[in-house]
Image (cartoon, rainbow, N blue to C red):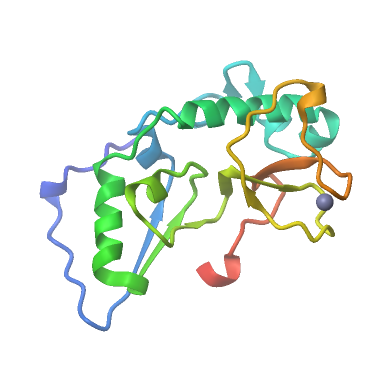
Length: 180
Ligand SMILES: [Zn+2]
């Protein structure tokens, strides 16, 4: 994999008064903060297989394992802090306002912790949960809870199970209309 060039190799980016900027961030920016990713892991993450913890089929088969995995991810993300790249994008947002469109593939909250207010999380958010029933009127909500074990899976008031607000393989990314 090609190493990212140091900043000195780029000319400063000039943004005119009428111009807008689109920034897409991915696993690399979070890896710098110590967030673990599936990248370079051959589809295995600790003892978990991607298809078991990041697909609707995996959820249907074994929801407790899925929640154990995301509970571990929440626990880990709680120990990570934003790095200078997150800070720089937050500074850029303060300067450009809505002329900056920050789109991230990451589910961690490091852009928000750095001060970004309008990052679009196309693959969902680790610290949100929602009802597994798409027809339910309960909307996604902030949730830092960790649920380990069969009996620990939270229930929606409709009776269905609460699932992580994460876009799994085979699901449609969020906000595609806005991003497009
Ligand atoms: Zn529900």
